[in-house]
Image 1: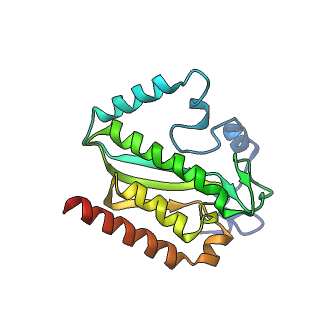
Image 2 (image 1 turned 45 degrees about the vertical axis):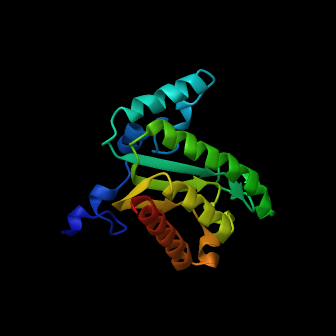
Image 3 (image 1 turned 60 degrees about the vertical axis):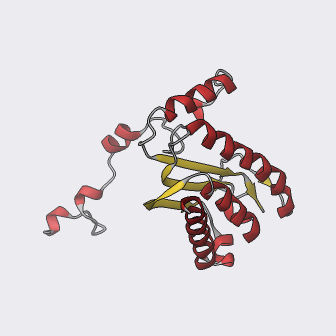
Amino acid sequence: MSDQQRDPKGRPASARITAELLATYDRPGPRYTSYPTAVEFHEGFDAKRYLAKLDEAAATPEAPLSLYVHLPFCRERCSFCGCNVIITQKPGVADAYLDDLEREVNLVADRLGGRTRLVQCHWGGGTPTYLTPEQMRRVWEMIAKRFIFAPDAEIAYGGGEPILQLGIEAVLRLTGLQVEEAQHERAG
C-alpha cells in the first residue's frame, strides 16, 4: 500500500472515520442483535400470544432453533451495563429463579413437540457465571433433557471475570459432558 493510501497516523485511508460515515450510521438501533429484541415484548404480547407463537414455531419441526437463557444475576453492577439484573452476593437467590426457568424450558419443549434441534444457545443476563457450578449443571441438564444440540451448535456465555475464576475448561467440560450424557440417555 502506498503512502498516499494511508492517513497521517499510518492507518489505511479506508479506515478513517469521516463525518459522512458517522452521518450514515448515526441512528437508533436495537441494543442487541438477538431475536426477538426487547422491543418485541410489550403489554400486548400476552400469554395467549406467546403460546400461539410457540405453536407456530412447532409447525416446522425440521427447522433449527436458537435458545437464549436469561440469567439476570450479578455480584456487582458493571459501569457499562444497561441490562435488567439483580445485584446480590448470595448465590442461593438464583434457586427460585431456576425453578421457574425449568418450568419455562419444559413448557417451551412441550409446545414445540418434535422441534428440538438447537443450533445456538446463549447464556446471558447478568453474568451466567454468577451461578455456582451445581446451578450451571442444573441449567444445562434441564436444557439437554428436552433439546438436542446440533454437532456444530454455537454455545456462548456472556461472562466476565467470574468465568476466569471458575475456569473456562471447567465450564466447557461441565457443559459438554452434561449435554452428551443427557442426549445419550434420550437416544437409549
